[in-house]
Image (cartoon, rainbow, N blue to C red; front, side, top):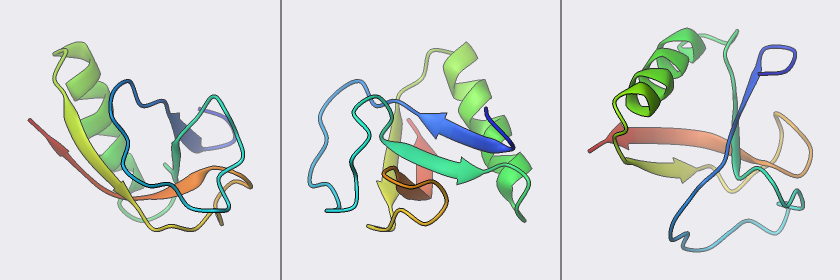
Length: 77
């Protein structure tokens, strides 16, 4: 997390990427300080601790952090 922004690295198959995505290390970002952001952070951390896979989708935009796709939703398997 950096300045309230949470960066996600995807390990596995990704289908399609927005043209704005230019950062090689990170695939998705969301703002933990925005409405609903704390809840998303809780879900991401819980999934990581439990070693669960997640399905994730983005908005095809890179507005939160330049070059990284904005997170739209995620679902824990």
